Image (tube, rainbow, N blue to C red):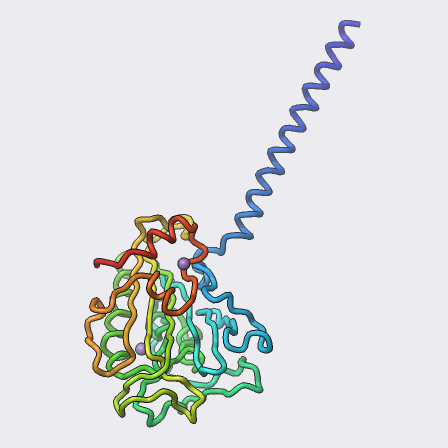
Length: 290
Ligand code: MN
Ligand code: MN
C-alpha cells in the first residue's frame, strides 16, 4: 500500500515537472518567434521603419510607392518623378573598392504606365542628378554600386548643394564608418522650387520631375555591434540636416543641422518609428552638437 502511494506521488511529481519544462519551452519559443517577427535584422535598410507607410501598390499608392533595390529601400512619388525618401544601412560591409559605374538609367521595375525618368532627363536643367543613396556608400560590388545609378534614386539637386555641402556631409558619415561606427540613414526631399546653375525652376523634364525646395538627411550612429535596434538609447547620436536646394548654399553642412522633430513637422513623415516612443521623443528633439 505504502509503496503504491509513494509510486503515485513520484509519478505526479514527474508529470508536474514535465509540464513545467514544456511550458518553459513554449514560452521561450514564443519569445524567439516574436523577436524575429517584430524586429528587422541588423543591416536591414528599413531597420528604423517605413516613415510614410509606403506600399508596393501602384494603384492605391502611386505617390508613396515602396520599392526595394536590395541596396536601398525607397518611397517613390510618381507625380514628383522622384523618391519621397530613401533609406539604407551604411557599415563596414558596404564599403569596398568598386569604382563609380556611372551607368545612369531609368528603372525597369517602375510600373510600365508611369513616366520613366531617363538618364538624360535632367540634361540642360542646371541641376545635377543628385544621388540619395550615394555611389560611394555602395562600393562593395559592381552590382551594389550600379544600383545607385538608377534614376529612381535621383533628385534634381543644385550643383553646389550636391558637390559641396552634400558631398562634405556624405564624406563625414563615411569617415565615421571607417573609424568603427555603423549607420542607418534616411534621406528625403520636400517642397517645390530650387535654384540651380541656370536659375530658379519648379519642375524639369517637361514638368515630370519636381525640383525639391529642401533636401534632408537623418543618420543614426552606432558603434559596430549586434542587435542594432535594441542598442538605440536616449544617448545615441542622431545627426539631422535640412538644406535649401540652392546654388547659394554654404558648403559647411554643420550650418544646416536641425532636429528630427523639425523634419517630421516639415514633411509629415514619422522617422525612427521602430525605436521605442520614449527614446524617439528624446533623440528626435536634439540637435547634434558635433
Ligand atoms: Mn551627390
Ligand atoms: Mn519619429
